[in-house]
Length: 270
Ligand SMILES: Nc1ncnc2c1ncn2[C@@H]1O[C@H](COP(=O)(O)OP(=O)(O)O)[C@@H](O)[C@H]1O
Ligand SMILES: [Mg+2]
Image (tube, rainbow, N blue to C red):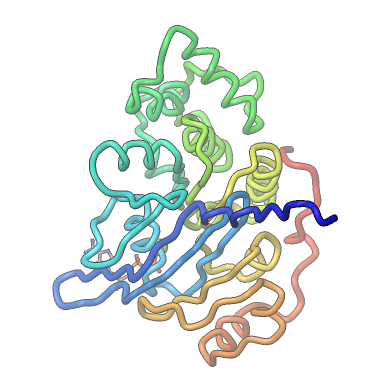
């Protein structure tokens, strides 16, 4: 006799954006962009400068308002104050420039605690929580009462990553998180992000113009040209067999032989 067949419904995407359109005056920065990110996966956005990558990130996390389109998180429309607030708690953000994105008047502990305060989560054990977050990004033994000017670009980006993780998000949006850093530090930060993904089951929306990075970390790549996704596929497929002339051009911009020192695999931190 046959047993009952249990059909497991497919998990809804963690994030699903449909028809995202954004205009600045008469200029259309994004035109009907669709995007899906599954839990624990890395979706990349690549495109030349000005193609709309940062605008897309900002619209998706609610820092900027779309002119059209909708965002769903875990199948629920992100709409209304309560849902929006819950969503903001579930999404971290790491920006390109760790100098600009940290308030120099705050100690690094205060920087990391910002989201905890913003969401009313800073309680008695706040300092220990901050300590744990700093430890988790390779800042063990670093004084949380120190000011940011004491730290290098790479260390500041670690502080920004700790801040992004403070509310224990399921998704982290990274907007060119390594491109302002020294080449020698880029690999360490990328390794840290990959390690955190494995340990915490994070999903990433990863924005970059570095196709070497894209190959290494992405499950899916979206190629953005003047605010439109012109090609989408697995990292392997996009880099091996790009269909769109623009993607072919982007790939052509990558040096033929990838220098050995840019290869990831070295242990994080120095
Ligand atoms: N706040 C803004 N006001 C006016 N135009 C903007 C603003 N932000 C971005 N843009 C324009 O939107 C386009 C996309 O910019 P951006 O998203 O920063 O691109 P990318 O991150 O891919 O370099 C550019 O033409 C840029 O000038
Ligand atoms: Mg940008």
